[in-house]
Image (cartoon, rainbow, N blue to C red):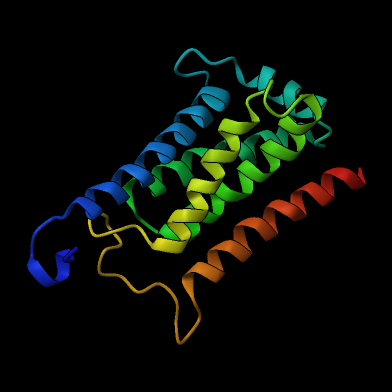
Length: 171
């Protein structure tokens, strides 16, 4: 299949990457707004703080804020294809924590872990492919020199997600 750069036209692959990037990005952003702001039928912030405390995150209020801001910001940036390596890393880190702390202990499939894992893996896929040509990042090179944006995104997202889990386990 020809690319947009060589033909000047949008291809099916371009549209496919937009959908594969925007769908999980919007889901994550809406989920974050639901938890943090009570939008879209969500609970109030106090309920979210209580949930984080029940999962062992302390101080729960801090981690609820970090999670909400990361979900809203990372999800919107992923949807737009803007700062994509950072956006994918943000979504990966949050989903790693969601699966490990919020899904596996309560029955992976029964608690919706399959859905959460699929969102996280979509972020991994976007980190590997890039955002596509229908994005704000379409002509942007993100990292200086020979540093690979895929490796950067994977190390940052999964690394910080793991650090948060380690901090949680240490308390």
